[in-house]
Image (cartoon, rainbow over all chains, first blue to last red; front, side, top):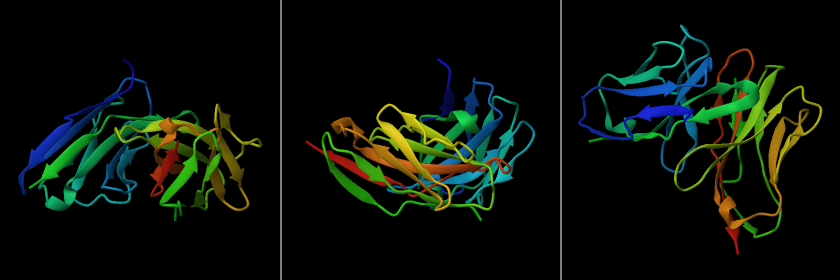
Length: 111
Length: 114
């Protein structure tokens, strides 16, 4: 099925460990985004990529890095996980005038 | 700076009644898109409706309509004939054309009472 695929769905990390969240879309979208959502709160933009080959910081980029590997894939890396990064992470892609499609989310716990 | 404000943390509505969820935004860009999303308790993000800043008519999608007042920088979502399945969190979002940055408000939790 067409859409945005995120992996993994769940992850538990120890403080200081690293990991990469993967995101892939098959809708030929230029724009891709990474968000975090903390309990009872809205989505905060971590990084985004307006087109292949470009990435920009969002509202809360500290502690994260991203790679736009190709038009389909946009990964988010935590180099040294901290408990404050416990959250639900969403990837999205789309076009401005047609809305944006979200992945199902990654629930990350850092202990 | 770009900002979305949703001032209603939680709202109740009786089934079959209409409800308005408020959203105001701030941007210096002249061209931008406005969006509303629904997030049920299962957690997925569902796209509801889109309004372009240069669209002359308010957007409508089924029971959803967007009350766009450009001069007031408001983009309120109106849900007509509320259903129990409308109980969810609703997010307003904005994307200026120039920056590509899509940001969200804090959300409004809507509960529909039978």
